[in-house]
Image 1 (spheres, rainbow, N blue to C red):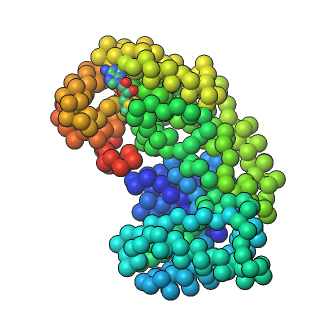
Image 2 (cartoon, rainbow, N blue to C red):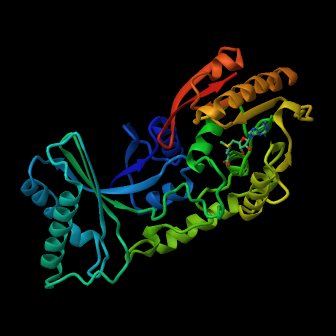
Image 3 (cartoon, protein in one colour):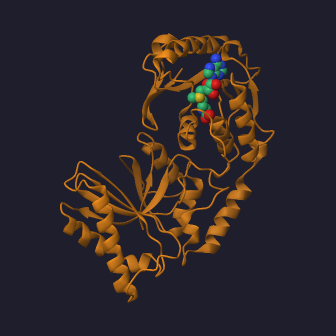
Length: 370
Ligand SMILES: C[S@@+](CC[C@H](N)C(=O)[O-])C[C@H]1O[C@@H](n2cnc3c(N)ncnc32)[C@H](O)[C@@H]1O
């Protein structure tokens, strides 16, 4: 099947490498997605193991459309009867950008109507009961190119199944995993990792999951598991193999601190909920006084406040100067920082050796490494 793994802009390259590591060699990056071909087993494996992708979708059909009639015919001719069972529930979401057809609601309605027509004809029925398993359909039109997809993931993949509380500005798990991957920290070396603004612990938990070979999807279910005709035995085996690969003993020297005791409470809860209790050290500390006790090469990864409001800006700039001092006190340490504050480098007072442009939600950020 033709598939796409959707991802935040700028993470396409990382997701492509993740797919290649799963043995999917034909992965090709697109804007906000990576395209690949796979069977149901590989799609399930992708859902289970991709750390940085948002969703895995099956492409049901695609083509150029400039009128509602063309859209109807494109959707109508997709093999819905082969993909959806008779009683499938198939809600339709949509988006349109820079296209002749710009009414999302109309495009959704036409797509729905075309699928209903195809299903009625295939199953020889007068109406679709839609009381069975859910197949979330999406119609996306960009520059007149329409793509109709079926979501195999269900909840977005950043939902790892452990997070029940959110702090003030949590980082999405998929982005946190990408930041860890792009940092100088090497999980299978003798390096220590510390997050001096750990908040609710997203970066730390992602790092520990990577180090212990823990599948990000092990604690959650995927939409495709509810579909009839899926190779359930293979899905069970993939889940079991993932469980066996997880080795918490491999986690070492991952720690974090934060000035806010409330955020730390959440952080500790999350660590336990994620099944990583006792493996990650976290404590309360203002980073201006922080001294990480380790003999090992040290890497800091931080997602400090950005100071979006003017009143917070000055305070953030002071914090960034304190981060420079923190880096300086730990001779030989590496530091990676993600921020949307355009004056970070000036406040930090040092030119980064590596810079990446990223999107944290809608915020354009830089990921700087020292
Ligand atoms: C953007 S949030 C980090 C969110 C975190 N990545 C998460 O997933 O929840 C920034 C964090 O920096 C912390 N912080 C602000 N000033 C600090 C300071 N002087 N020392 C340590 N932490 C600080 C805040 O308490 C907040 O938790």
